[in-house]
Image (tube, rainbow, N blue to C red; front, side, top):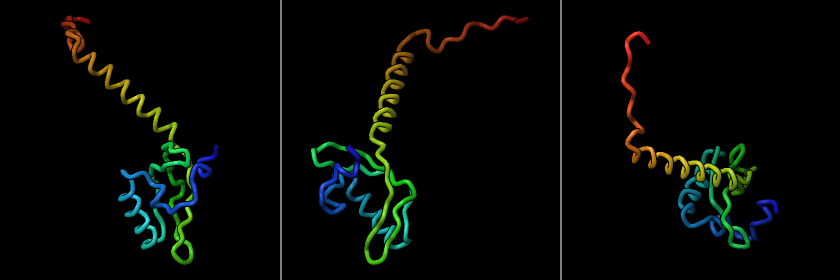
Length: 112
């Protein structure tokens, strides 16, 4: 299903996930004042209750009146993959820190 189909008819504030509401409100005000925002990533709640993250491509642009037009893409899967890599790196890093030989260097030999 296309990300925009996950949204029900609500205001931007209603479908913004609670932890991103204040930041989204700041960005909406900024867009209305300066006419645009760029590279905004916000978490939204879909109709079925699932979380998804959108990133504005060219940023929101102010339209006549108090409307904002934003072209967005769903980056949920990419963000999940990035988190999995971070967790994996964290696990391997913890293992290496615990291993007694992880940071030892062999003695250097003259002439080599």
